[in-house]
Length: 401
Image (cartoon, rainbow, N blue to C red; front, side):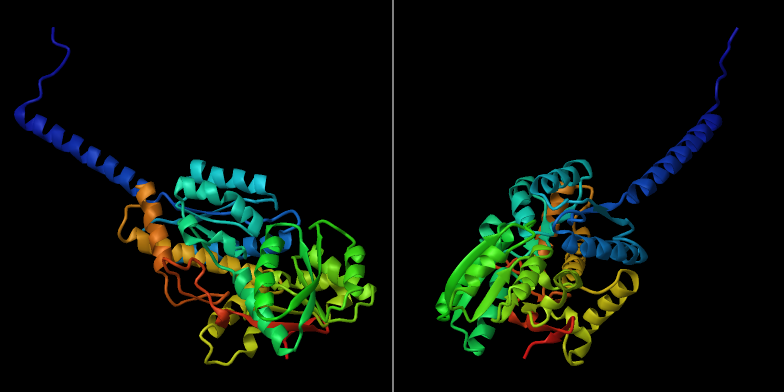
C-alpha cells in the first residue's frame, strides 16, 4: 500500500512555483529586516566625575540630535543610532567603553572623548582597531602629528590655537610678565607647553609656574606664590570645578592682577561655582556664547543661534562643550552618509576606512566651534576665525575689549 502520493508534472510545477514564492517572500522579508539594521556611532562623554560639566551638555546634545537624525530617515534606508556610554571622567572606564563600542556594538565610528587625557588614552586602541574617531577635547596632541593620528579627528579649537589668540591679546595689552597655573592632567600640561613657547616667542616671561589637582578644593598656597611674584596677569588652564576653585580663591586672597582662563571655562557651571570671583575673568573661546550679537554676514550665526535656542529650550544655558558634541555628531554623520553612498555598511572594515577618508575631505562645514576644513595635514580644520575673547561681567558673557 502506498502511503505517499505522486505529484503530476503540472502539480509539481505548481508546487515548485509556490515553494519558490514562499522562499522569495521569506528572503524578501529577511532582506528588508537586514536592511533596517542600524548604523551605529559610539558616543562616549564624561557624564559623571570631575569632567561632567563637559560631558553632560555633550550627552544632552547627542540626545537632541538623535531625534533630528531619526527625522532624517536614516542613511540609505538604514537608521543611525548613537550608542551612548559614560566615560566617568577616567581613562580606564573610557577605554573599556571604547572597546565595548568597537568590539561588541561594532560601531562604524567613535565620538570620544570629553577630555584630552581620555582621548589620548584610547588613541592607540582606535588606531589599532582602525576605527575613525572624532574627539571632543582640546589638546593638539590628539591629532598631531597626523602620521600618528591617521584615524583621529577632533572638533574643539586646539589648545595651540587658543593659546595663540590669548598671547596675541596679552601682547595687545602690553603684558610682558605672567604667572601660570594649570590642572595636573593632559589638558593642563598640553596647554602649558603650547602657551610656554608661544609666550616666549612673543616676549612674555612666565615668572611663576604652579599646578593643582582636578579634585583640589583649595589653591591658596599656589596663589600666594603668584601674589608674591611680579606678574602682571595670571593665566589658569583648567575646567570646572577646579578652575572655579582657583578663581574663587584668587578673589578671596585679594589678588589684584587680571585673571585669564582657557576655553575650559566656557560654561555657566564655571560662573556658578566661582561666584562673584568670576567677574572680570577673560578667556578665549568659540562664538557660541554671544551668538546673537554676531553680524548677519557671519557664516556661523544662523547655525549658532539655532543650536543655542534648541539646547536652551530643553536643557538650560548654552555652553561650548555641547557645541563640541554637536560638531562631532554631525561631522561623523556627514562622513558616514558620504561613505555609505560608495561602500557597503555591512563590510564594516571597508566602511570604517571610507568614513575616515570622508572625514578628511570635509570642507567649509559650518559648525558650532568654527568652520571646518579638514585635510591630510589637518584633522582639526579650524583657524583663528573660530576664536574670540570674552569677559565675564555681572555673571554674564561679554566680548572682551
